[in-house]
Length: 309
Image (cartoon, rainbow, N blue to C red; front, side, top):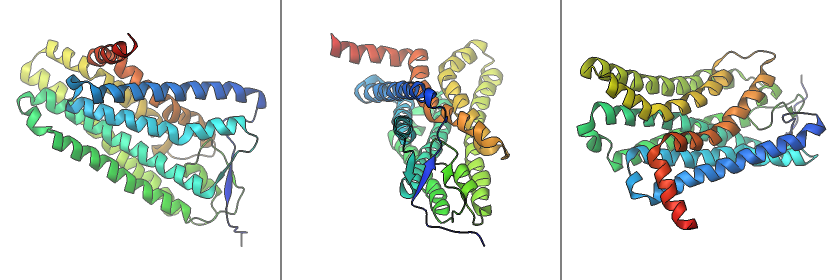
């Protein structure tokens, strides 16, 4: 019988054990975090203050920016603290809380990206009915569904992980608390947890991804076969290019981590890939939407240019 002990805290092994590299990683993550806060905060401000951006597309973009601020704040502050400190522990409650909000916000982003694709599909394929289908009430309802369902999905993971017994080393082979590294430390039966991670998480991620893909395939087919217009297709795809880039940036790392089969050497790879979706993606989203969206750039100049003149 294995020695089961009451767990009060875990030791985060972090990104590297090389002491000399830690100041370098601290600077990199601090810069990424600050860019994420400033970039997403700026988008949130202009979407709120600029009347011209009070449309369904920018309503969802504002939700995405708010989500990205929270998403990066779940992991990066703790990463920065552990890089500066010799004590890299996280309490059991803090670990489960971090896991919950990480999956809650990650699932919300996947669902929100699918809703943004649906919004573009309605705008391009049904322009005359767009304001009726995507009314303010419908937009608020869709956003609320995304946030609420994601919260309860994450609650399943956090409750099922919290009830596990831990009897192995309490050294967590990651830089934040996630389900997969915690399952490696558990000595109780983790079959249900693994099933939830593979089937439920995989189904939600792939379902949202295929809904997004289907929306854009329908747009392409509609413009090619109904209108037979390559000019309109090029215009539509250039309008949707920002969203497509964000989708690829989000689903690539998530698919690699949660959908592919686990292997004995996967945790090191997962840790490196986690840097992309926990630190890089929240930074890239505002940059992509700002650089490729003329309306957002004009609103930024109008609001922030006026404030600093």
